[in-house]
Image (cartoon, rainbow, N blue to C red; front, side):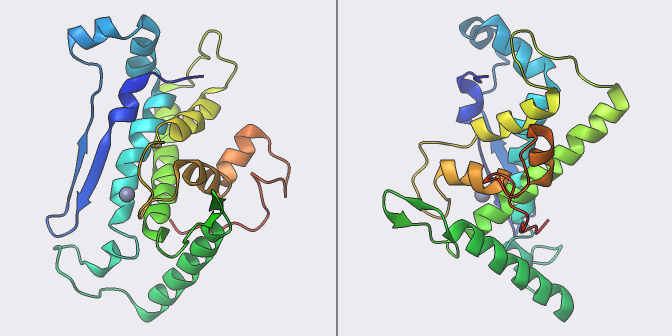
Length: 216
Ligand SMILES: [Zn+2]
């Protein structure tokens, strides 16, 4: 299933000291935009919660998770730069962060090895955002009942959730502190037991290794 353009135009960021996140997006709410987009995408964006949670939900979750990544964790609840972690929690955080950095280090693009340490903050946020959005979607589904399948799309609502997560990663983003989009998708989803469960990936296949790195 292909999402149409609007979700690709969403950008978001977090401000630690002000304790707030901002999400900017060209979401088709204005009538002229609705006309520009096909009826199907209108249906997708407004009615299909699995796509909403998988796309926009995972972006909001991503920004919130930055508050608990390797930089955000250094700020306290008031936005002050202050260590508030116990020694034990910090040691465990460092263990898990190292696991995640190694996880992404194994990817390489155009002959260049991914720098797992440099991109670890973004990859923490991707994993945390995915999990938070997945949990939120399942709470929504419990309260409202399961969503029906979309016509002509041979995916369950749970599979659609993960597909939307993958499609919303910005494929043209310059590689700086983010991993290339392809690795953000492969690295994060192969680390998700829920993804493997819904797509029935055999244990120890590339998208379902038995040893995973979970932070949040
Ligand atoms: Zn980020």
